Length: 151
Image 1 (cartoon, rainbow, N blue to C red):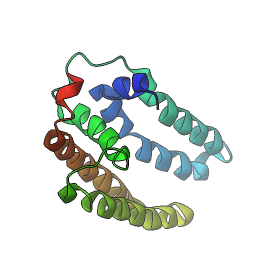
Image 2 (image 1 turned 90 degrees about the vertical axis):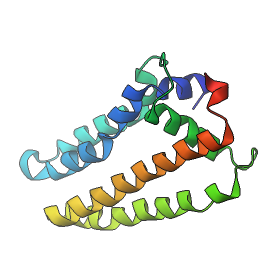
Image 3 (image 1 turned 120 degrees about the horizontal axis):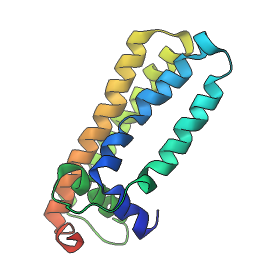
């Protein structure tokens, strides 16, 4: 994403509304039982929303909130190969990515067989891992002082 898009994505409305993407995707896939092939159109809409979401909101007036810090922390994390980060931030984001990734297994299985319990379990892992990751990004941005340069 461009600098402009990252700044718009830091709007808390962008970050918090982005949390809707996994449940919307699940609802789109699950709906195949009720509406035949139309879920393909719903999946396409969720994909469009995923792309458009960081661009949909204006730059925030105030960055002193958890979600804005998390978004800017993600940006620092992504740039860690060119701009080193403190060593104590290096491992946990990878672990949380694995947790989220593992959540895809029961989620996909549950959607395949239309069993709500693996779907719910998978969503908890996917979304819980992502939210915990964002919390770590808040810590990262506060530790690196990168947030101060964004004000």
